[in-house]
Length: 235
Image 1 (tube, rainbow, N blue to C red):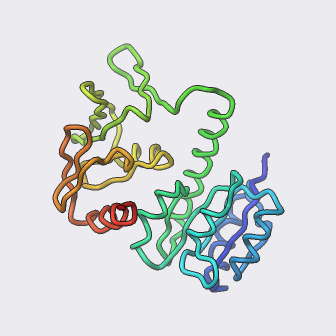
Image 2: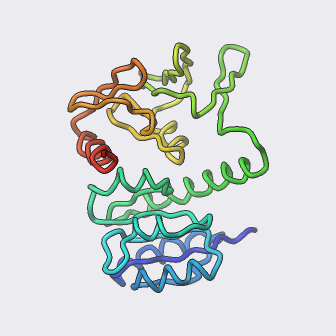
């Protein structure tokens, strides 16, 4: 069994204890170190091989988001915080997941599965020059869809409509399952019925975003996240 090396960074010892307790339930993960000082953690990351980092965001000296930006190796990050406002910024940094404290074990387990799935994607991409893609079953055939071609995904009862320019495909999948699969590639939900790639947004107002010629509605529960992302990326 391959072992994944993990470190935990948080200025609260209790938070470290919770994550430590959860990780120990997964035998393929080894906790290499824990840190209450993010600067010391950064030094450790530069000198050691680490597969996964659980880090708080709001910390003195070096924040979790600054730590992600400064780390140049292939280490993957999970952000943990008590504040929901950091979600868009975190996913724009291509972190594996964003956990709101207090973290339940059920929610933590989903993060672990997301990490392992993303690890497979990275390994497959390293072993192939092919662009990220997946297959959709249409009748008796399987159609290959490139992730970079997706404009948006709309939930339609038991199906998801995946729109790629003038073409679209229907997948017998829930939006939740698709969101988990595509989140490593910068996709987020902006409405209970819509998932979009953040980098494809060309215009935005309080009610909708524009991707190519498509107007996608923005739900009330997702508006603040999206607005924060766009504010941070304006001139």
